[in-house]
Length: 170
Image (cartoon, rainbow, N blue to C red; front, side, top):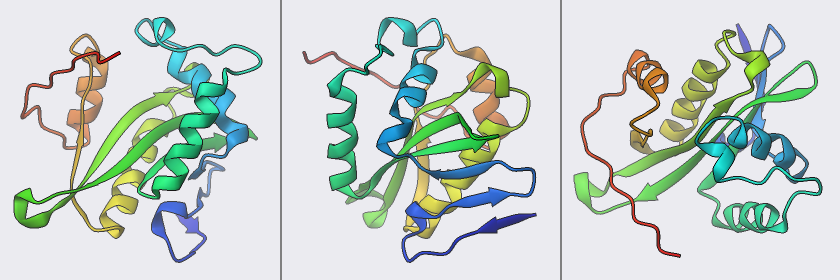
């Protein structure tokens, strides 16, 4: 059973489960928790800087995303703390008959909250929000070394259909 507030924009809805899990858009105040989760694994620890105070680059990136409107970080909150996050970016395109795609990035669940279906509920809520904003496809990339993540996404119905490639530009 769930309860949702109902503002005009489905991307900004606050979703509350009866067990106390709340999924909502992140605020600037959530950035230290989000960055800490991004850094809390073997791959992320070399890419992120969860320093205190948090480097300004994170706040600037958050503000750029907010100005875009179709780019949002969702957080999962439980017992007053942020325990999960992900980013959804809507990509409007010409291919697939002008389809809108939802790109998901940075899916993380705090170590202490794992096993409570937080990641699954975040992803399912992201799907609902993306569909409500007109997305017909959700896509993501996952590092080839994240075998557990591959299984997680497959359980949610994702299919390994493409080979992703990246190139550092800076």
